[in-house]
Image 1 (cartoon, rainbow, N blue to C red):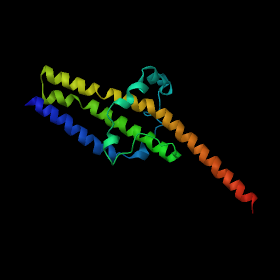
Image 2 (cartoon, rainbow, N blue to C red):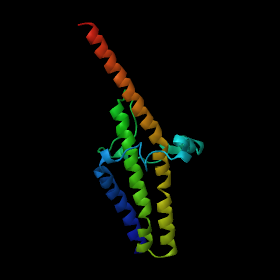
Image 3 (cartoon, helix red, strand yellow):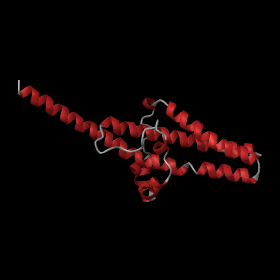
Image 4 (tube, rainbow, N blue to C red):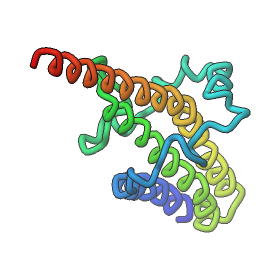
Length: 168
């Protein structure tokens, strides 16, 4: 019975995590501030590229591909700075959700206090590590893109203002 409860817990935690993630206040999750900003040892995400994240990250499941209420973890070619900022903040949400799920993996062992329950808890906890790595790999690029797009938008706005002022 403990094994079935553990599987039900994993499924239920996944569903609950989706709703909790959607409820998190995006304005409080800043991709440029700790704990979301890259740590020095991450080299702005380059350490993850050295691990080959860019080769396997798109092969893992992504809830935003199947849940219509989620922000897609992609920036269109016609993106604005707001679009890039939104996706960067979504990586913060995804990271929080995966950390919480990983930290709560011990509940599996409480439900099934046997060696198999311990193994399930460890494997379930570790299964979140690749998703956390993906968020930490993508976020510096997205945050930089948001800043550059904002600068471009300001240059365009200033050029329009200058042009309008000269024609008067």
